[in-house]
Image (tube, rainbow, N blue to C red; front, side, top):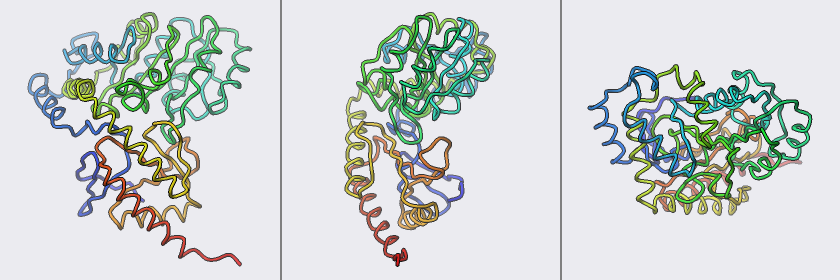
Length: 373
């Protein structure tokens, strides 16, 4: 389907022209981008700060919401220090620039890691090697031959299919001066106690761990953050050009993110609802004989035949009022694949309705396919 502009949307529906579709795309995992309290917080902050702080946080651009969200989010995720940056892409770059100043010279990266991790290592001037997807054993083999400290870099939850990184195993192969960097963009707000993220979900704690995430997905606003022990975070604060020499996210949007975080902490039901929706969706897919992971990632990716067949499935679903994106996003399980994303705002009835329509479409497409001789 062509990349058609969106005319309006909420957490579960998207309007394009005169068509409104029940949507199972995107990354608004808690539905907070459309929460009334968040919208009001953005409006009120815009009246106080305007739309841009118009300067680096290290000069005159450090608005109160920047400092508050940096502090409150770091404490919520149980890290020692945090550094708020403009977005998730910048978070990885800022982390690497801080590590480079601490003497890191090598990067070992999962082959299917997000492009921002690979770009950060390249821009940081590190010598890069790739280990096979989810294969800590391969990483252990590569790290033995490195002549200087390294950082192992991976998504915690992979953006295209919801796979979980073997984080404990990766942490276990670090040498004394090495670091593990987890991009938790698709784990934060989804996994862990009240959505504290993938490291919290699996009990991962270490002074050699650095966690980055965007605020555009789980919190539904804008910005990114680097979190970890004091040494790497303060190095990034002091030496990262990606942090020091750029204007931060709009203070109004950051104020919205601060309100989102407070909602997440106050309303335990919102995260529980997301988990229930994920599990309902997983069982629905399995009744359709579609393979689905066992963990509570909000992303489900699958391939249903060749590209032409999947394009017909996507079009038939849209004709019936359902958007299930057929994607060619990099590092997916196939050149094109379906990526279903669930969020806390989907009702149980909407998920069941999707399942009924999906079943009907799959049956219709199968009937129209030629029978092999």
